[in-house]
Length: 464
Image (cartoon, rainbow, N blue to C red; front, side, top):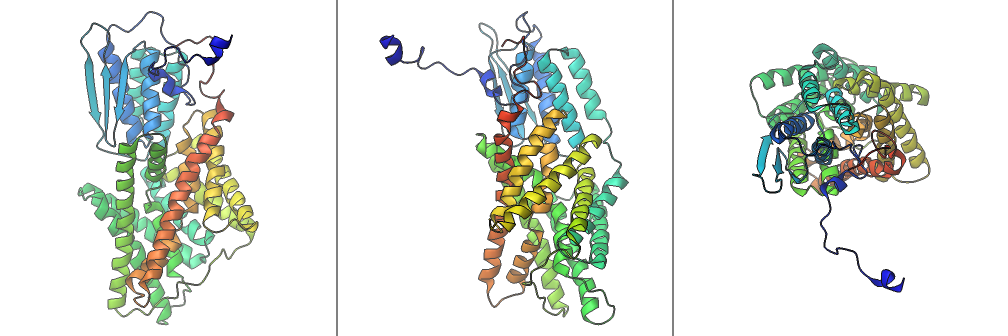
């Protein structure tokens, strides 16, 4: 007994099985075929690569892609698999004993908003893990997912984007006319992005042009109001804040933080660089519009005044619900997840309101709300057959400090008396954005013990 207490592990340097990477994921404990490795292992590897490419294109994080690959290859009887994921590529190495190893790689070169497709891939992997789908059937289902139309048509996405901007403008303190300007400018931005996309313009310049258009239109209507031509009573900062939220790389930031925490530094670095470039493009577009406005003789703005919703609390919650529903449509979420996204987002807003009431502070309040949203998103999404990201990303978008970004850029571009205020404000806005993304990932990890029995975890009659 004493010897068993003091002796070390046996063997002390044994390598961890790659299937252990599935612990805590929705694909834990896959049902492995008893007949041994598949004779046509290359077909299994090609299917796993195609599935991984589809998940990356639809916005999945590196950990989710890795666990899906491991679960699928293990379910189809392939051992001795190694997975290497970077920002744009997936590499698989299969090295069976006394056989020629196989190495295959796939590069992902395009991305699209299709959370409905990502949810379908998640269900496919879950069915494979359960042992209910053969490889031929899985390949056919993956082909159907790739060619399946998105749940909402393009005109509905464009109209929803405009409604989202209008609702956010009203949510953060704008009036009806400000919401109307936000709606119109966002519609124009969507059309501009479509044209620039056909011309193969890089995303950086497309985002910068969109930020410029949103800011220029807001400043133009404010200038007409200030000059006495029309009586609009529009706050341009609020209109710009509502317009640029859709331009922020929310999904990439959440995935980057998730990859960095889960041990994918190369992928995280690539996503962070891409997200910060998008952030820089938004900032550049705002700055150019402000400088052009000053050169045209526009008077100075008062950007330091505090703003809040002009409507009663119940109406504000209803406006937020409209914003959450429309952003879900814009992100092409599954139809059955639109209402859960709205309810979780409203719940996060109530948690944030309570946190602010008890004195948590303006910087930590968004992070607390993001943690609550991240936890609820994992529980609800797994129950409904989807990954956490599908609900969490649309539900947190209203937390992002779009107004702070505009104020900071106005201080950097126009307020030459004290540029340090603009730099500090921009740094604070970036800190809040990273805190929100980190809060979603933290909430996802906090909810893992509550989801052990969901989506394939700890099912009976399984063996590795």
